[in-house]
Amino acid sequence: MKPNGRSFGRPGGWQHTDIPDATDVGEWFGGRLPESWFDGEASVEVDREEIVVIGELPTEQDSSPAATEGRIARFRETTRGDRMQIAAEAEKRYGRKVAWGVRNDSEVVLFTHLAVPVMTRLRQPERRVLDTLVDAGVARSRADALAWAVKLVGEHTQEWLDELRGAMESVDELRKKGPKI
Image (cartoon, rainbow, N blue to C red; front, side):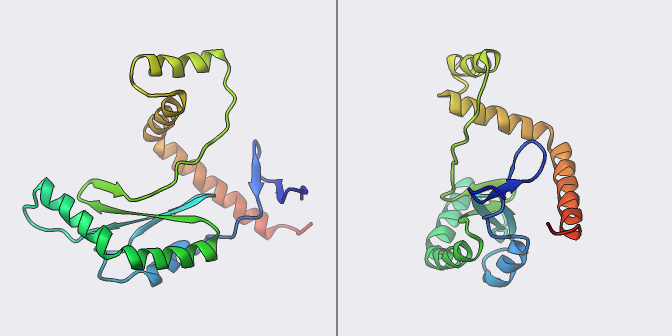
């Protein structure tokens, strides 16, 4: 273990050992959320900094866009206190911020959530790509251009990324079974 609390983990990067385990986060939220809030179970996604909880609002027939927007605003306001309390409990337990969102049909609306800065080193050809996106008005800044590019890659490689995450989970399980040093 290194003095900064991190240890070597997966090839190509550091594995944070000071972040609380969140393998049971879905089950914890499943038991903690009021059943009346969502149709079915909420989806819970977690990374090193944030937990994002998204639930499906109950469906209403022939709902106009304005009515849907009103239902989302009503949910956000009427559940605010309870969501803040649940988030505080989860943040204490898992050491991560909690963001909330709702799904209505195919639309997902996220409430306050993190935008985490990420340091990267790019050579001139990569910077030129970002600058082209900025100059063309696709993005406001290099940071926005990079976020746009990452999102685009994620959308077009989701199946591969899911397979890679599954493989990493398998390696983590094998590592846990191995000898302790």
